Amino acid sequence: MDIATVEAIATAIGTVVEEIIKVAPAIEQGAVTAEPYIAALVSLVEGNAVTQDQLDAAVAQVTALSAQFQQPLPPDDGSTTT
Image (tube, rainbow, N blue to C red):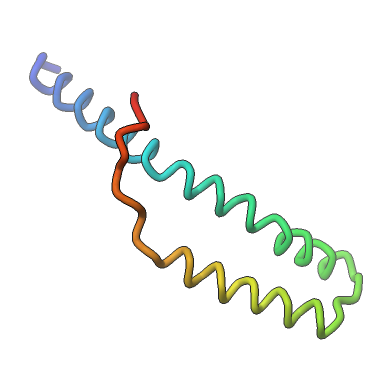
């Protein structure tokens, strides 16, 4: 591999890492908000009953989170660095 190819690969990797860092807070928040749903699914798989009220509440939360997730990310405030 020549030096130009190595530099191009390094630049591409840097760009990907920068983009991941920008969206990391949203990904982390998504993982945190998914925990109750994962727990409910595990409960169902284990054979524990879920009430209609619990199911309705979960659907309402998923609907609200879905709407929130589809909103554009805020502009970069420059606080994220690599």
